[in-house]
Amino acid sequence: VFDNKQKQEIVGFTQETDLPLRVGLLVDTSNSIRDRFKFEQEAAIEFLRSIVRAGKDQVFLMSYDTNVELVQDFTGDIDALTKGIRSMKAGGGTSLYDAIFEASRDKFLHSADPDSVRRVLIVIGDGDDNNSRASREETLAMAQRAEATIFTIGTNISGIEMSGDRILKRFSEETGGRSFFPFHLQDMTTSFQNITLELRSQYVLVFKPNTPRDGQFHHIEVASLRKGVRVRARKGYFATSQ
Image (cartoon, rainbow, N blue to C red; front, top):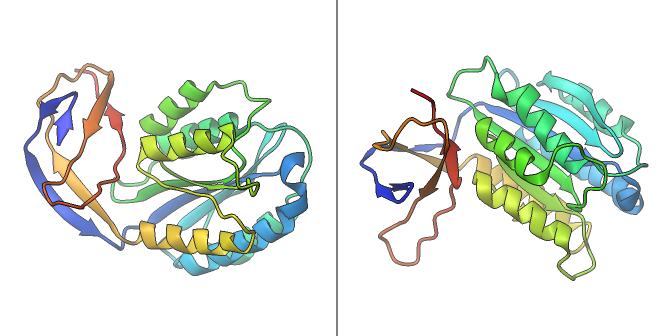
């Protein structure tokens, strides 16, 4: 492990398969996804039914088009979440960055939850943005400060990589998540299943930084000495100030 290119001593390494989840599901409801919106809603509902454990996990719902709307606050009630998803209507512009920014800031940054929860944002959309006040870099920094892991499911089914696809990949890669790009709508269910597996099979690596507590963003590099092993981890963190 390297923190700002300085090698660190690892003091803990554990597999965590049972942490309580705090999940934000952010759904693009702009005009650009109108023709496939119904299927996305049903796939999201099936995902929530498979992942939410009563009394342990909580989910909130946000929709984003011209505006960002909190459709359902944190709950473990599947019926309430299902009702919230089905109440969403497609139409308007796209405020992707504002949605991620507000979800990270308002739901995770000053959360009263203990450290032993997994904070996750799942973003469904095409990666385009034409209406946000927050910039891309401001949004990424906020997600990193809130220690949110972002998984993205792209809705571009053209078979050609678009600029929005690259934006979704960046949000996921920088926060330790993963991007999925189902070519057929039916593959979206598989994408949700893969996210479920990811959330239940992660590892926590602990080190005590020997770098300054300067309030700045510190870049992290995690590598494995074992051949053929690829490590996926968040790209860094904001250090506390002394």
